Each structure stands twice: as C-alpha cells, then as structure tokens.
Image (cartoon, rainbow, N blue to C red; front, side, top):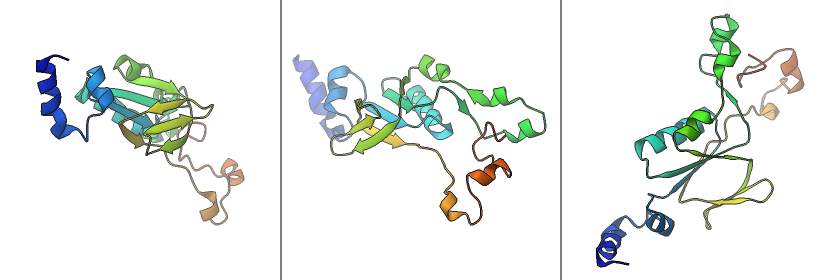
Length: 161
C-alpha cells in the first residue's frame, strides 16, 4: 500500500462504521442489498445507484415482471392497458443495479448475509427489506382467499385488476 493510499484509509476511519473493508478493497462505497423488487424496493435500488454510482447495489427479486398498483385504476376504465402497468427489470440492470433472481429465506444480521432459497448467500453492508404487502386473511372476518374469486380485492395489480 502506498503512503498516499494509507493516508486515505486513515482519513476515512472516521467513516469506518459506514464503509466496510470490502468497500475499501474494491473502491466502492459498500454493498447495498435490497430484498424485494416491487414499487418500493425497485425505486430505492434505482435511486440509490443514480445518486451514488460508486455504491454497489444488488436487488433480490423472484419474479421476472412487476405489475404496479399506482394508476392501475385507469385499467378499470380502459384508459390504460394492463401491459402498461407491467415492468421488467431491464431498466434497473441498465442503470447498474445487479439483479439476483431468487427468494430470500433468511437474514443473518450478525454475519450480514442473506440466504436465498437453494442456499446461495449474499453479503451486504446495508440491507433494505421491501417484501411488499400481503393481506392477512386470518384478520379479515368473513373474507378468505377463496372469496377473492367472487369479490376481488385488487390489492396487487394484475389478474384482479
């Protein structure tokens, strides 16, 4: 290590809680891992990478496409087509976000690792969990998954829209 680089490292020790040894070794600002590529997770990943290009941003998402709820009411009035509400992740990868197809099954905060279904482990410095929203049918008296066929909730844009 050169003396100039050593001085940079020492000067950066004040920010050590925020910058990992991985970041120092790889010339990035660290690894941001976002679990969930819905409206919140994909937006956060995109803007984090745009605001700080040196940040390594990885998005874990099991689906190949996302159907957005905002503006989906326009589909009901035929003002917008459902395919206009459906997005893939190509724009995110083009923006420098690494996409990992998978389903997170465990978070180890002490080791800063997320385990995917199948056993793959991904390390992070900062983690954002954006798993989305699901209806808890056990808490809705008289409303079941089966009843959504007769009375859709459209909580998730797509087939019910």
